[in-house]
Structure formats: C-alpha cells, structure tokens
Image 1 (cartoon, helix red, strand yellow):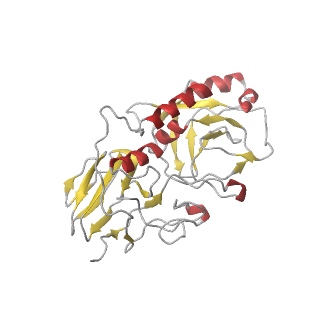
Image 2 (spheres, one colour):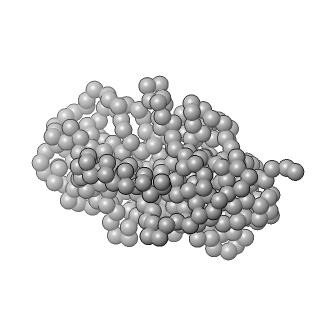
Image 3 (tube, one colour):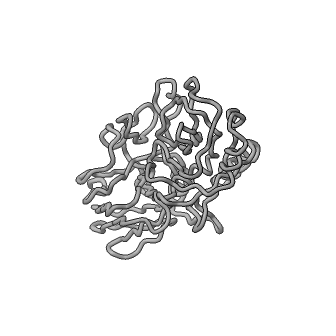
Length: 310
C-alpha cells in the first residue's frame, strides 16, 4: 500500500517548510530560519501529539494554495485565519481535522493574521541541512528540494508518522495574533540605547508605528517619527532575533528569522521572542506600539510560555 501524500495542485505565494530553526551555525554566516510565529507553530504540533520542533508548513497570505489528499490523514491548523476551506466548507484554525482521500484544502486570503501553520503526523519529510529542515530562501537551503524555495505546483508532501493523537487547545489559549487597534510589542533596551537622544527615546515608545510594505522573513520595517542616534555606523556585531536596528533614515527595522548574522546599524534593543511571534502575524499597515520591559520580565514571560507545553 502506497504512503498517503498531499499534492500541491496550486502553489500560493509563500508556503515554506519550517521547523524550530537552524542553530549553532551563525559563525558560518548561516542564519537560524525556522517558524516566524514559533508559538502557533508549536501549538500546531502539540495538537497532533508531535515533538514540538517537528517540521510543518508555514503558509503566508494564503494566495489560493491548494492541496489535494490521496489518502486519509489528520492534520492540525493554527495561527492566522486564511479563510481555509476543506472541499469548500470553512475550516476553523486552531484545531485538528481529518482530511480524506480526494479532498481539497484551499487557503485563500488573510482574515486575521498573516501566517498559518499546518502540521502533519510526526512532522513533514524533508532533507535535513545543517541540522534543520528549515527553508531559508536567501541562503538557498532547506525545503523539499534543498534550494530554500517555496512549494511549487506538483510538489508532493509526505510525513513521518502514520497516525496522530489529537488534542484540543487548553481553555483560554491565546495565540499571538494582532489586536484590532494597536498591537503591543515588548522590547528589552540594549546598551546602545544610551546613544539615542532623549526625545528619540520618548518617541520610540510614545507613538504608534506602522508596519511597512517592506517586510519579509529577514526584517520588518516600521514607519513613524524618525529616531536619531549619536552613533553613526558601528563595528559590525552579532544580530539576535528581534534586534531593533535604526538606519540613517531613523525608521526602525526589526530583524527576524532569516536576518543576516552581523550588522552595523545602531540598535535600540530587541523585541522579546513573544513579541517577534506577534509581529510575524502583522500585515502591512498594522499599527504597533513598542513597550519597554526588563530582561527579567522577558525571561519570566518566555518561561511561562514554555511551561504551557509541558
């Protein structure tokens, strides 16, 4: 009996295989990659009883991505509401569901959020490169064909498990989707914050910022009142996830999963991992507000999130 598969009947603009990321290779100039909304990604795997870092599909925007099943399989869908349908019937996110042979799953356009995560029993099959299956377009690694490219029409998806242990999200679970008015992003100030003028520090946290069209998995630009640093360029240094760089035009760039490993713009600080997940779900035009918190507060929030999966 042949293994069940999902065939890509129509490719959306950006459907990528992602896992928890590629670590321990930054000294080679290779970025971490991995699921941009790591919280929704983990919940998708949790719903099927998978290891939380199992490879899944990160679907951006929807764009009529169409998948057809040639066998029965239980899948899990979390994150953004991309108006998904199963044989034309609306499919609610944040739950598992059965997809039977011959059925068609379609992702159309964002209703809330930007990225949806589709998990498979045991995780998706894909080559492992430098310890990860994460697809990184700018480095041409990962993905089904080890070229870092999104799914294309005709691709076939297989998975490692033969069955799943379905669960339901715990009561009150909140995923990191944008708020209707302003999305608050927690940020830990860095050592270079002292080089920003007092007025710029005030403006950084007391105005709404707008997510710009110039946004991808490398970085997300915010637009608003320009910030000014007394530093010009600095010696290039390592860049963490969520780093808030301020280029000469004074408009912040938040560096995300596929960022470069070093950079030379002054940094105001870094978003927390929780805030990075929320920002990853923000469409261009979304209003966000930066909120300073301490490193201790950020660590406590991160630990509390991790405990939810134990």
